[in-house]
Structure formats: C-alpha cells, structure tokens
Length: 249
Image 1 (cartoon, rainbow, N blue to C red):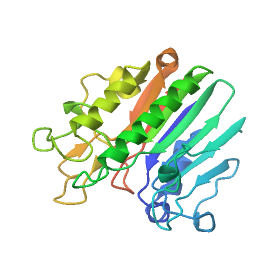
Image 2 (tube, rainbow, N blue to C red):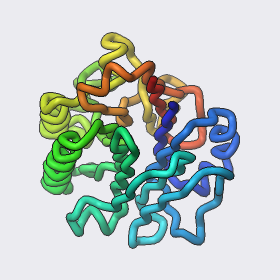
Image 3 (cartoon, rainbow, N blue to C red):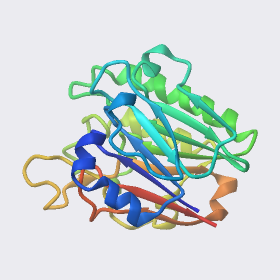
Image 4 (cartoon, one colour):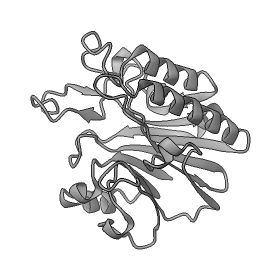
C-alpha cells in the first residue's frame, strides 16, 4: 500500500502546476493534502475510484485538509474537538480495518511566535488523541507538522534557533510524541540522511537546497515493522513543500 501526503499550498494553484499528473503517475492508494484553501464547490480535481473527504476552513482561501482514498474507510472523523483548530480545518481521521490514518496541518507559530502558546495546546490535544487511538489499533499520523525536529532537519539550525518551526518548545513537543511510543518513519529508516520538504520562495532557497523537513509520516512503534519505505519527493514542484510517501507491506 502507498500513501502520499503533500502540503499543496493551495489546491487550485497546485492543480495548475501538474498536481493531477503527479497523482495519476504515483497511483497511490491514499492521498492526503494539506493547506488546500478550497471550499467544496472549488475542488479542482476528482479522481475516478477514490472517495473524497474535505475538511475546509471556515475562512475562505485559508488552511484546510483533504483526503482521497480508494479504500473505503469504516469511519471518518473531522477535527480535534477544539473550536480554534476545527474552525481552520486542520485534522481528518479515517478509520480502516487495521489502522487509523490521521492527517494534519499543524498551526504555524508565526513570525513573532504570537501563536506559540496555541500551538502548544494543539500538540497536547493531538498527542492525547493519538495515544487514545493507538490503544484500539495501529496509527499512521501524517502531514505538515510545521516543525524541524532535529538539527539535521534544517539547513541553518544556529541562525533559526528561535524561528517558528524550530523553537525549543516545538521541538520538545515532537520529542514528547516520539517518546510516547511513536516513530518518525523517515528518520528511523534513514538516521543520517539530509533531506528537506519545504523551501522558502525567497533567495532561490529551493535551487540552493536551503530547506527544512516539516512533513512527516509517524506511526506507532508496533506498526514500524510493516513500513517498507518512507519517501521524500524533493524533485516534485507545485508548492513550497514537496510530497512525501509511505510504503507499507
């Protein structure tokens, strides 16, 4: 089975840059998209044989997540139960026979870290939710988590020490998640590999590969043995993020 996750930075914009071709060529079983920025009537792409699960933000042109799956889920749940995050369309959970798939678009702490406290609440809510789900069956947690966990996950760690996405607080929350019985699939399989999933649009950052690894596939430890590969498609354009993939046995 193949699952792909991608922050498309606006589904309509990414569609105009070749999103549909990528989807057709990869032929994944499930696609999880973040920062879709579309309402139901604005979805630019419908894939034959796939069910669609869109969770838009209340504010038009902002945030939102969407899942396409050709495997019919047993149940679908939208949101976290916290109004602040749910009004922004940040989390969708699909229950399948053997695992839960949770896709997320984590809040950005913003330039002056004015949303850091809110971001900490989000992390606590998600950790509680993931631990609860993992008591029932396996969990796959994917999406744009808006944090570079370790220094290897960011090109310039020293100059970004207090930047949103690389603060001590955000990194500690990721460590707490991984210490609670979950695994970062890419880093577990490739402990020393330097790969990024996001690049600023400024100063030719992508051309120079001055990036951050902000997008993840995280699974419970019991599921890690079924992970065949964790992929980063850093040669795929269409967004300031690139797609990531998970291959499971």
